[in-house]
Amino acid sequence: MKKFIFSTLCLACIILSCRAKDKVTQVEISDENTLEQRTEPQYLTLLFAGDLMQHGVQYKAALQPDGSYSYEECFRFVKDEVSSADVAIANFETTLAGGTPSTYPQFNSPDEYLLAIKEAGFDVLLTANNHSVDKGSKGICRTIEKMDEAGIPHIGTYVNKEERDREYPYIIEKNGFRIALLCYTYGTNGIPVPAPHIVNLIDTVQIRKDIKKAQSMKPDCIIACTHWGTEHALLPNKAQRDVANFLLREGCDHVVGGHPHVVEPVEVSTDKEGHAHVLAFSLGNYISNMSRPNNDGGMMLRMKLTKDAETGKVYLEPGNADYCLTWVSRPVMSKHKNFRIYPANVPETMLNATERAQMKKTLTTERELFSKHNKGIEEYEPIVAGTDAH
Ligand SMILES: [Zn+2]
Image (cartoon, rainbow, N blue to C red; front, side):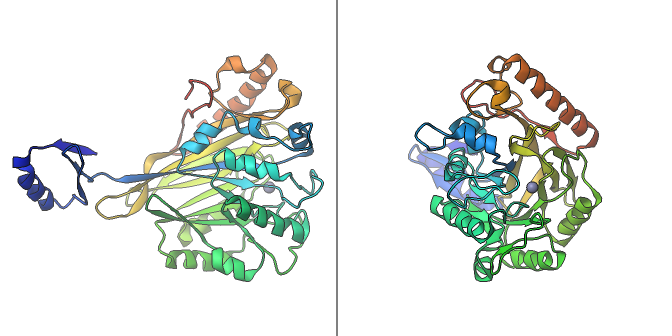
């Protein structure tokens, strides 16, 4: 922001000259006799993380002597980065059905997991995924109820049609930006969705209606989050490409995917106006106890949206989307009590030799994959909480 120190004598002519300039949208006079010209754009940073899984080993590791669960350590090293975004979004791939927790194939997690995710800085959670119906009606409804109680907006599952009609598409309103968020899953592991509840499925007829509705709400941009793809595959399949092309063609500005439990490439394209569109096929596991190759790797995708000061138009400039890699250390390897998500740039001295070797292996695979297949996007070094690294 440009600042001009002025004297009383030249105040009038400065204001006159400012008014003459089309670019000036607002003129403020501060207490320090400083004239500020708001000619520069505003920004909104969105951060997306992948799948928040919750296997039995994870809730056992979080169990405290008093019977409560503590997940603080899981997010300790990423929370400053997550919190630094204006809006942080992740996929909640379990349910909060209450009672005894349960693991794969029908997840039910302690409520403390949700609270720790909020505490880590996540603002919005996606709930449409293949585990949405793991605990039937109770799982769908109680998960929604607990997120409402915690004040965390959630997108993708609904108690009934009336609720969906009222709440979907979800509009993030932050710092003068209005972002429409859509969320869909390829399926629910063959478990039927009990009436009258709704889990948003990848159904192009319905999605087209939803995009039209989103457009009628006049958002600054539309982002679709998709749960899709082939588990453990490092490259997207044809169905992902087809759905992505459909979403972008119908009016979504960006598409962010998950579910394969490994990262998949990110492609940033530029339209004829020079604005960027992100297609991220899979952000991988953000946290899990999965142990197949690359299941311990994930990524955080960042988009810094621009609001033009003159036109009010919101867009993504090429170069303003980037990603950082994360890696999960499991207690079996670290000998720490709990799981930990580490940004890739964590100081090596914080890891033991086994952890270092395993993290290096996963990161090497991911970086080789991305160097071949990513388009128009670079890796960045995030803040690592509790250290000087960033
Ligand atoms: Zn999934």
